[in-house]
Image (cartoon, rainbow, N blue to C red; front, side, top):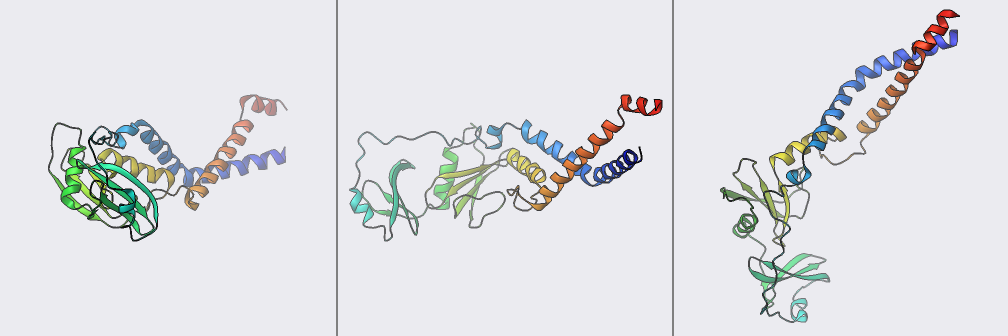
Length: 240
């Protein structure tokens, strides 16, 4: 009986203090988990605003320079070579040990990196809405919680109701990311959920691990109290 009493008191203390410490974060977990589950992932990714899936086919009469002619101008070991359309022109994309280089597929002439005007046209061409908002382009050279893809990249900001930003890689001209108001809301609550308030991507932090273990102990202590305070057990103790 005395041992049962000590267990009851110990479980009560553990449950009380853990409730004070862990309780607020558990509410944040539930709220943030509900919100990120509620937001459609297609809307978060901006698929309803920017078309990133359409494939532009090569013209039937397209002619290409010999691959060897293009490879000879790489000035670095080539890891891969691909062809795709860029602003109505066929280009050869070489992935080298020194970065990615573009060439005119028809002539084999090296192409300069994508500039702000070209990046803006690429973003505007992928815009799905009939409304054509104004846009501005700025160069991004460092990773941030908002963007972690290919660098450097052009951030094309459109003045729409969602404050959409379209990121276009400077070396390839490809759209590498789309950020919307829904994405920023999602990302904010995601950072709260995984307790990585700086980079918003690491879910192996000691904060998360500590609070998860605390939540487990809270649940175990609550289970002990539930069993000990179960009406049937209380009636038996009173009868004894």
